[in-house]
Length: 217
Image: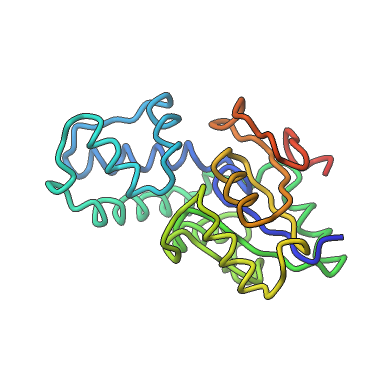
């Protein structure tokens, strides 16, 4: 039995990506940018991990100079919009997630987060679905704004393992995307994949199991 379970956030704990897309589009409109990301646009952009990185990629694709926009400030405004949408109750956990967390606690397994998203986004989700701090649910938090390289690099999973003080062999990761799977595998972890609405159909070769959700885990 694994000593710790390490969860991705977006798409794994909750189907957050459509809310992220809405927050991006709302922010682009508010800030006076003539951009609007369709679902197809966002599915493509998700192959680039990190919100600031996605904005830069979008600008490069349309031939705009990233230096003409304060991308960190734009992304900060998007995060504020995203947390506001979360606070309005527009999100919920994916099926089976709460049961896995509850059962892990009952067995004495430790819980951790390893995510590309930022700390404020993790806190927003925790407040929305548990009405508490993320640190009250997960012993360890490792977020994308704390590492040099985001998924598919293994950095954030390695950070989580370091903070847990455990080897990869004693832990199990939960992911929803190919980039997440590659990241966890590169860190030496066994991985359960539950594809999300934006990642269904990706190649998850190397996963220990691929499940529609965690209901029957």
